[in-house]
Image (cartoon, rainbow over all chains, first blue to last red; front, side):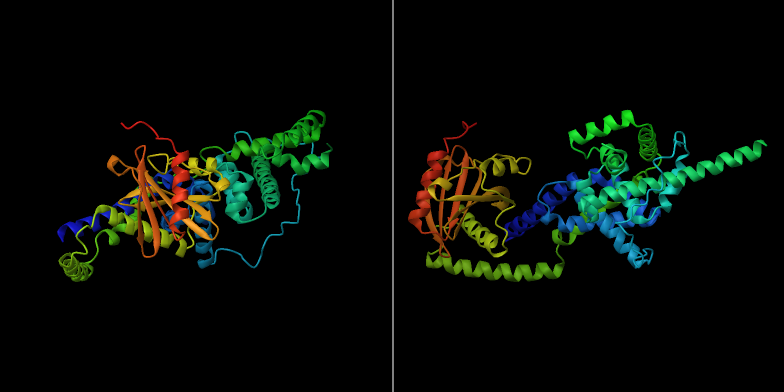
Length: 196
Length: 259
């Protein structure tokens, strides 16, 4: 009897432990990327932490459906979905105003001979500009520039075609550059005024 | 390549998403065209600005610990069932013991061995794999795809043989759990019949000869060879299942020398 009990106990705890150990080995290395993405989508430390915790629990529950493959893209997809659920619940997402992926707004004019390089720009300014970028552009920029995901991985995580990934990255970068250029221009003006 | 095309593709170029020929064409154009070269510089400077470490948000130190404890507390209830569960478990177990006693007295249970327990697990696993439509984790008829898939998932490498020439086509593999250990399950198809072949390392050298049995209407054959235990289960008739085993044994050499 006692033997049977302990046998049963050992078997269930073994499979559970196996699952946890396997999950942790696969998922924990991407915790930094998960937090960074959540933090950029919800703009708040506490909520980002809660979201990552919830997303990892979800991922753990779905883990039976994960049969190898790209763990980082898989986890970031779940983190992103959890963020969007949170944003919708908190009405922080403007769903009535979807962006038009067919538009190609080249903010940075290619014929502009004035090249503005952003070397030495204050990282707080960069953060500020990225924060102001619409979420559809912000997420692809974060996934590409900070997390190094390929177009294919981004397409899967955000659930858009690869062509759209490229056009959103292009528009996102152009907008960011324009925003930063304006900031830098203002700073230059201020400096001139101060010096005058 | 002209300026318009370059403008369309330059982001793909910087992201390493273009094929080689297009990349070279872009590079050629950037060498020749000053305005495009300037905007390429702008993109490059924006990219290096964004990838600075202090733009990214650092992982709070406490979060990893928090996630770990959430995961372990999530499986806790299963590990430590409540007292109500145990009470019912004891009642159920007593009933099972009583029934088992009757069997023992009747002499039916006299030759219960560990093999029978495993046979039962094998049949259950086979039925479950068909019921839940979860036959394969790695669906492939290519033995060179199926075998490497097990790498890192098991602490042994199961022999995977393609017998499609002989009418037993490999359809894939999956991880399973038999006799308190993870095992390889290889799935073959004969007409409409699915065959599950379970493999795991075994030191039981006494059981090299084949043992056939029937459980719940399924045919089972077990044998061991080269330090591996094999169990095959199917609703296929015994003669054809024996033929399958014969083919497998012919193709599987005696395996690695026993340690």
